Image (cartoon, rainbow, N blue to C red; front, side, top):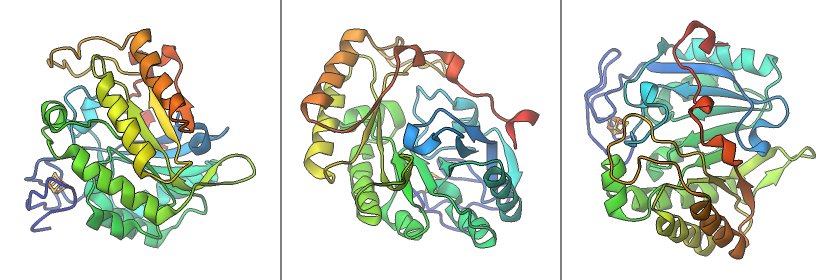
Length: 293
Ligand code: SF4
């Protein structure tokens, strides 16, 4: 690939089979850190048996506080061909997964489409993303991805820049989520409450930044179709030796209640997390033998 423009960074970088020269430093070959059943996504994704989670290595956003920095910043993982990924997807389906989740997969979109041409799992396909996507790349996924699970992290350009070197984060992500909703239409569930089509917007509350959370929830209310669920996450723990002032602690109960109460006042449907989720115990292990199904 001579000139990669798959994400909003639009580096125009060369990516060969073994080297990557863009912001993400990813080669063209798919690198994957973990392929496993995952029980802890939102209930309409994981259900009772789990989603088949494919954690791709690398990230186009690379938040300073990322809890998965071994894979997102340091690109830990193993190389996979499309045929090998197709085989893994088949094993996940054979293991009874309700859905398949492609997690931070944007730099590999072409290779994933090749894998799906070999084997298309007969369950909903979920695109789990930082939200930092281009509408052009999302067009490649139209008719392929059934459920989008984007983050919506930062409202102000200043926070996007400080946390992820992406002052255009909200501009790009709000356009991307609008496109995701256009593609899927209204949320649809099966008789067991598993999402078959739709968008779930995830928001992680950050310490000291509840006004950003409130601005983002207001945007969801005013701009996305009624009924779009929001997954409100309180699991922030300082990771990756984050050195940004104020991000060195978990959120307080008061901060969580302020944002949760606002979400309820807006009558946004969705999900909320237990306080116990703010622990590094929930950070999965990557790149080890047992990390692959
Ligand atoms: S996917 Fe990587 S190389 Fe391509 S535009 Fe984004 S950061 Fe740059």
